[in-house]
Length: 528
Image (tube, rainbow, N blue to C red; front, side):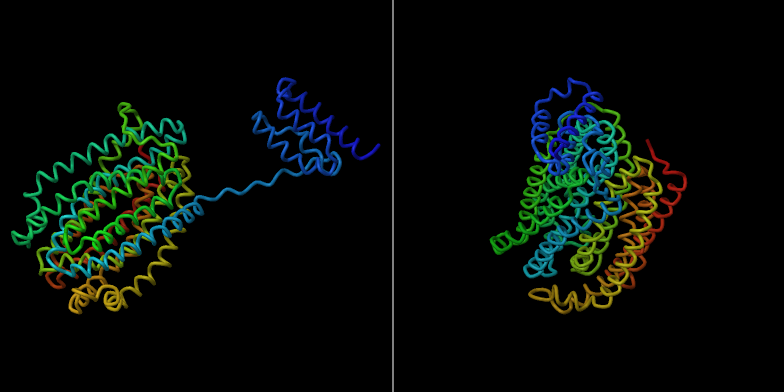
């Protein structure tokens, strides 16, 4: 008997075995009959190479278990070894890959932001007009981080849990409900800010004269659309991250600084400081449009729809209240710092702002990507009660943070004056400004290791749905910040505010890790 006829007989035997296991009805599938006919017309060697494809095709067409017969053509009728599978990435590797992706895209956005700051420094220096814009921009940016950021931190753990357990449609209903509440809150807050601006701006800019206060109010009115548009961008970015899409959402942040640079080049000499407000609103509008397109491309409906106060939405609202309070207290650190800097010599607000720029570059390309990547995966591990995995990830990445950030901090402190001189000293930015800003930056850099560690720890606390802990820690930090600002600014001026900020992050980091240790020791202690 020839080898070809042996292969046909073997194949027919396997077909009979498969039909005994699965019945004749499934064998009527036309695609499988054609596939089997082609296989019987091939040589024995070719049939051995094609048996894996036949198994995969049968699985796709019928959804049945892989029959034994399609794995019997290696070495005569001896069973083949099981097909090799691609090993799944561990949560730690997934976090690293996502963080690298976000960091690379954020680095591009950070370069654009740095170019924007250079352009702003060349146009406006450390003058009163820039002070007015920074105070006007302070409250809208604070409200976006407060409202939209808090909603995201409260929503994403529940969103991932609902998607995994109840399906995508239930997750879509939750997202639509959250969008209704978020949009209503953002628009309402924008109207309230516009109405109350004449009353709270004198408090924020307590050292401003009447003309400077009026300029600040007009800039604030121009920036009001930024609150709702940026809130949508933040919320949509979080939903894309929950679906493990990290790169393009992070890269979309480049549109705002590019828009500001474009408006400065084209209309900077005509509109003056108002160019910054118009460029900011235009840029965030473009960013929201890109993120909305990405969500629609992935099948997410953007239209806010109210499906009632479902249990998952009630859970988000329940987590939102303490998260909002904690973000209000913690976010008020920058608000308090800027307001207290306005009580000092003219240009102190701008000096503090410039000192944050280089520090923020490391935060944008390091701490923010790591936190962005960690929250979805921490939420998955918490949903599966994988406490050992949470401990392992936290321990590994905490060690990595210390090894990387401590040398960077030492270098930034040592070369602070050279960095500020190289980056900012040109045009209206003088050597005197360089001396002031470099001292502030050197003390502000001390926060970097503690900021990274606290940022990672906050994501795990949010995944554990223990946002009341963050609220309590934020209250402590706010008190510490005000007390140390008052003490240190007497002796160090605006540099004392920077040193106080670094100390606040140290205290917050210690408290966050202590709370995590207690929670994991008790098996998570999740709020359901």
